[in-house]
Image 1 (cartoon, rainbow, N blue to C red):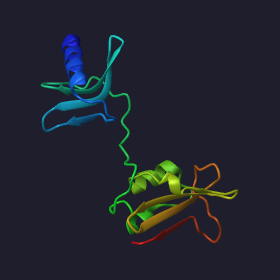
Image 2: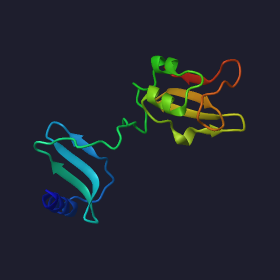
Image 3: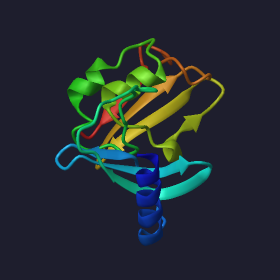
Image 4: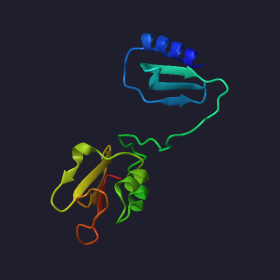
Amino acid sequence: MKKHLAALALLLGGLVPAAHAIDTFNADNNVLTLDSVVVNGTQFNNVSVFLGNYYVLGIGSSQPWIPDTCGNDNITSPRYNAIGLGMNITQVIQILGCKYDPALTYRNSQAIVYTWHAGTATINVFFETSGYTTKDIGGGVFKQAQGF
């Protein structure tokens, strides 16, 4: 099996131009596409493997993929209302289902403001200067929103 995988990887690595890819599995056709695979110390890039009958032997980790940008379904009133005081950044990202925009991050001596946006909708959440826990910046304000 390793020899067949190495041959397939070598063939595909030579035919497919180098590009940054995300490892994916297409359940419709049982094709596993990998950004890179190392076989006997040699790295093969852009590898696609057809899996006939297969068994999952183990899982190293199982974290859901979070998109870098938000869509209109991420920046909504129900999701905004679910963000609570004292939450950590991971919890807020899980609620919104997308990552904040690092270009819009604002820091001062009192807080860090992370911003999520899609179109004209924006959510700002205030965090401790450590960046880990939401923070009340006065009068119960720890988040702001507009555009939805």
